[in-house]
Image (spheres, rainbow, N blue to C red):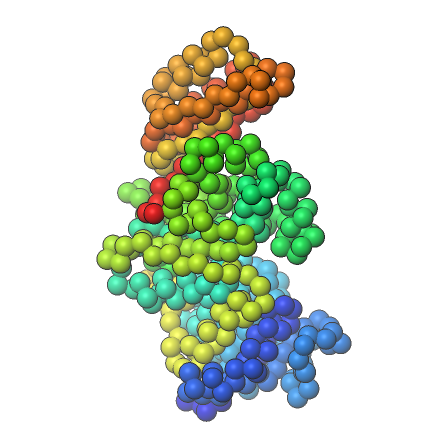
Length: 434
């Protein structure tokens, strides 16, 4: 092994700059921990003039990141450009084909192209490391791939998007509506100008697809994830959830079932007594369930310059020390096909909220429809007319465990009732260890 490991960094945005600074500030510590000196020798970014908080003097500069992959001096290419196609994909693919290890924080790339890139990595006896792609500074990839290697994993659950968690936390604490809190999050820099990937659940789905592959030894399959964001969550539902003893969180959940792997991202209600319900603000958390270890919860900052750079550098140190692992924990040709479990067969409890005109017979009609579909009620909340205007009242029903198909069928029928002033709201209720 060489005494010096040379790094090329593609992308000098927030995380790229943070990575270069961390490698410089902790140079001696990282040498002690890896047994080799780690040095950035080349970089690539669009703007050479921008002040990034460190000097690029002495570094080889490439205007096109793809040119980094042909630099024979580089041992590890760090891709921090982002996106599943275009220059990020081209750069990573070429680096692997040229026998260079790749470290990335690019969850979209791994979720959508990970299976292909893993095969290329195996063919060239290199690896792709991506701790920073999921949950920022929380070492969940290492936990699944190494720390829990002796366990059969039954379920992975995560608060995987800090923007959504911040919005839902603020809505609950301040009683404000989604649109209002989103606008504030954008001003504070917690949400992008175009928040689609975050609030529509796509970012969390990318991360869940990666975790499912690691947990269950299957090919990563983003299309297998059922995705629902938080735009439809109202301040009223958050208030009613509190009355019932729940909190609403956007969760990514992957679990092994008899039919296959169920993967979904959606707002769900969780008991306020559980640890995951108490993860607030921009923080992330991942709960893992192993047959020998039981439940394990990892929590921390899921984004930002320093936490993400921390995860990037941890991967660099592992590779420098010779601890490179297969991309998804197994050689690519041993990963199983991802057999999808139909959500129609999901079994669980449900929250159903109706806004109905307060007329005689409405509840009898609702309960009869639920019974027709085999859905039984665990509890009900009905607020009186005085609390609303125009005689419209919220009615909340908590259903005992039933199938998704039965619950959806009942809600579709109820939605057609003339007594509704707006469409019904349906949300899953999830159970976790306290």
